[in-house]
Image 1 (cartoon, rainbow, N blue to C red):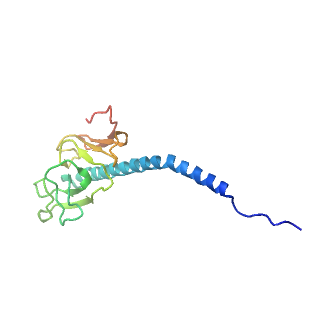
Image 2: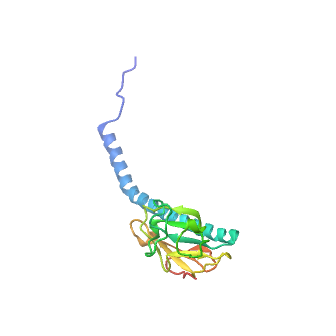
Image 3: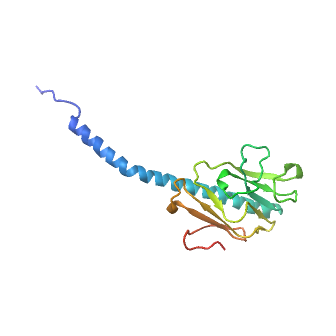
Length: 184
């Protein structure tokens, strides 16, 4: 006849497993936070570059000027408006076909057509634009405002998480190196 043995873990085994798990968590959590910030910045870059690409393509396709502008009420107002000052694009933006001739505000009553609305990016450390509060694409796809640069910051504002996007006068948006590339 077999003797019944003890089933389960000893207190020492459980404490060793808990200690190893705690050490792995202490090592892994900062890396996870940095990865989450990198992914958030990449998502913000993709959202803005996608809107810029859409604006340029629609300007060419529809043979009419298209504006992308910073908006502080993109999701809350009807109609949303372009911000009149400031450089923080993390508050959101709108893309519209500019048919009213003003080039400064979205005016649906004057024939402007809203193409895209991007609400506030809440997990952003900021998206700063160096020159203008809007970008306007001519019907040829060229920028009427000149080249522009956007700087994307992570929520922790660490410089190694920062990304820059250059929009050349040709309308092409590209990711540039933080230290060496100039926006031309």
